Length: 378
Length: 90
Image (cartoon, rainbow over all chains, first blue to last red):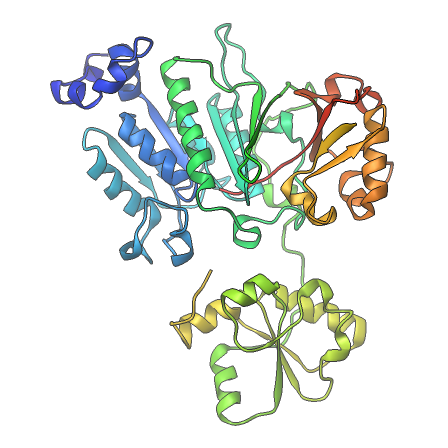
């Protein structure tokens, strides 16, 4: 353990930790010796990474394949305007080493998948799950169970946050409940929107991610009582907090990684192709004064963020508003990225036999990228 | 009256109401009361056999009803019932 002895500079840096009677030099050296894998460096990942780096966790791994987007900056406090378009994981590494040069950061600039999950988890002592979708949540959990690692979990939605410590090994050496003990199966696709669709209060991941970082530190150091077998709930709107018990479920069996997209019901089915136009073709139609109707099937709040001047008919009301859609001239239907509008076209073609509907390929995002970069994206 | 706390993802089915008061004496009655008042909620909380769906957990106070008497768990007038859905945002 001598390589984890604190240098004089580190002792000065961590003096406020060392001053805590239950903490001391021994806990600080445990932090220095620890290897933590943070999966996702977004809303939750930002405060988790900042606090773990500041606290002196010796080796932090960051898994993220994404790049920084304007719409991240409302809550992902690791990043600034000049980082937009850059790799999140690489950018995070630079910021964290600037904050604390005494630690090591390993960047895994990749998606967390069935192919790499076990290898990645195996290299670390503790995992912090800051991912943003159900398939990856279950994958993180199962990989941690199979590799016998603690999964410090947090998730957020609008004003609400959840925190727990899964698969925690107690003093007797037995493992506590895991994510599947709490939620044996995921909700059907669409019931619980992600933060991009459903929104999230920007400060919420700061609050919940800080708690997640605190639990990571407690797990590593053995100081305090980790939130194992318990689920913490926070509602920022009402400022209500609850702590509920989580029990092991004897029916939970995790023996191997599975197809998580399929498990969560979001595997792409063989979908009937729809006619498409590119944003450039749309511009050509406009300049050639071609007669066409354009319909936006997003939600009103999305329309308020950015719109192309289209008629707004949200997807869930499209069939009941079919009479507003022209059956003769060309009709372009769009959404944010092109998926919901394709669904709308399939529904309309099936229910009413439309033959004049065109999906705007890439939706508003493509339009903003290729035609009018001044438009906000989200 | 017992109070059911409605989680954010399900509030779109309760006219954005965050809680619901019920005079039911057990969990089953409380859920029936809630889904009768907010009928759109029923299909999201209950399966075809009127059982609570597996991605939803129901708590009485701090205890999962699955370790109590499940839907038959008694509810006192000052009880708090929590509906806990999985959320995945990060």
